Length: 346
Image (cartoon, rainbow, N blue to C red; front, side):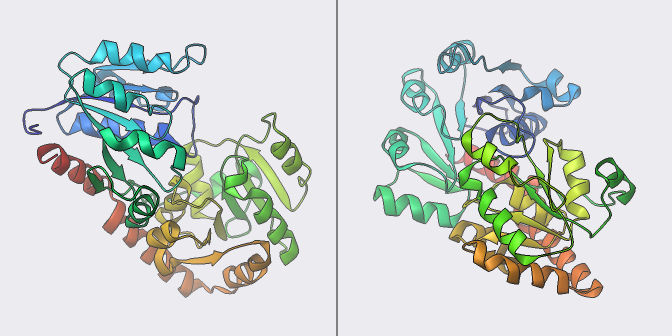
């Protein structure tokens, strides 16, 4: 395949509606618009394409929203529309695994992007695709589970470094700069929201913990979390990316409870916020020594003491180092260049 003449690429994202704070759809949307800007023809299937800018929608070849009623048949309908002349089918995440079997029959190359959350049951289906993994730690995990891997390349996720966020915008949530902790993530067990809340409450901090996420979902876990709501634990619902940047840039510290380096971890680093992250090889590869790591609620009081003891000069130095790490390793220009290299030399 030649990237200099422009390729026809079909990207299959997640099945959710707008996932402002995490997941496959923001990744799929970002990759789609940036690959178009690099000269490729891109078709996109995801649940959150309405988060794309109107200008981006005009330059995409076609955009299709997933239909919950059709389920996996969305994939087949989308591929049927795109397959003629399609050079690459790029599957983001674990919801279109069967496409890795169908796409080669349609004459297209398949890339399958996986992160550290890929499940063991998914792995045997990936052998017909080229794997795009988010980190060396994920690659090592896959090798440990699968043994022999199909062709694989490491392309880290992209992230931004938003700066100059007006602290007066915090008035929307009645917050003040440096006077709250932040957790961005869905109310799911793998995000360790309950453990973070329990550890935070045990620390007796005078500042509130602000949680971004759709806490109104009808699950037993979400209902359990809602029981913690009060003056010290505030649930503010979903928040779009620009307002997330405001919250992150002025947080006293950000929590990350997932085992993999999702956009919430990189978003905190990109905003220069002190980071308290769940201790896993993937998270350590992404954040390095710029985070305090925890393995359970019992570790969080010490982490909160660390965050509140950081002085002004230390905070500024930490913020500069965190943003520099994002620019060096996760700048979108670098991520797209790595994709371009893989397209030229699959």
